[in-house]
Amino acid sequence: MKEPQNLKGNEVIITDEEKIIAVYPYRDSNETKITNLTKSIQLMICGVPQISKDILLKTESIAIQNITKFCINNKK
Image (cartoon, rainbow, N blue to C red; front, top):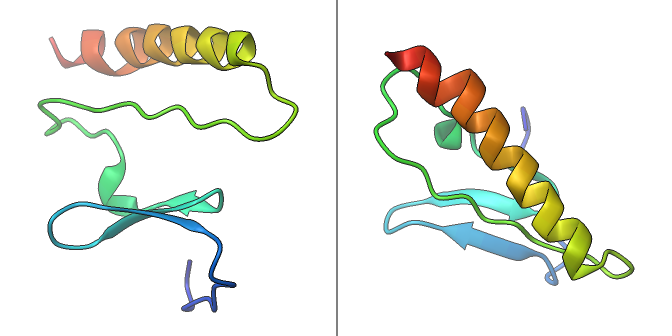
């Protein structure tokens, strides 16, 4: 976000030891992107009402395949 946003108070805030890295469901921090310097990742799949666990698991599988194909394998 270019400008600070006022939150309503019911958002899920994801942090590390130092800073906010995501405001769910709005967006991730620029610092969480995968780059050529990335050594490891943690993938977090979050659901919303009316999205089944099966769809979330399928989405997780597709994300892992794409990260592996386009990010990890390209670093070799």
